[in-house]
Image 1 (cartoon, rainbow, N blue to C red):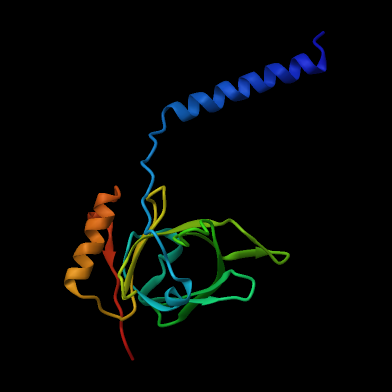
Image 2 (cartoon, rainbow, N blue to C red; image 1 turned 90 degrees about the vertical axis):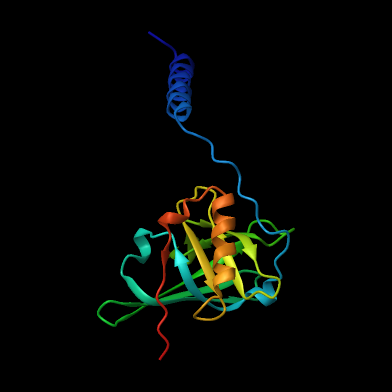
Length: 186
């Protein structure tokens, strides 16, 4: 009969071997480069979605997608995402963002789920390009599963959109997978 410690060591060894085997088939993505500095006061406000890498949580959004950010007293950021669905209904969700890299403010995490008042399931939100005058921003995730091009106005200059796509391509995204968003103004 094996002792408890010996069984624990064997289970741990098997677990480590299993994880190593699973990870050996994974390709490491090169780390995303973010902008060097984001002034959060200037970044807050309303942004219009110009393009996105389609994702499951926005599948019902057909047009007029916006994100509005507001600094909170606790240092976090209130996030309100809004879009119009095919049937004309407004789809709105509120969440919060927290700064992950206090040196640049370019790496954030966002959560849209609270349980007992605690935000859960944080997702990456990295700012990889930002116009000097904050007229547009490019948002990415290290996994490259999500990506957005945002603008302060419902339309974006062609040269700015081309730059945004060039940055995304340089950072390892397939820009052919991005979809232009429809913005309809009332």
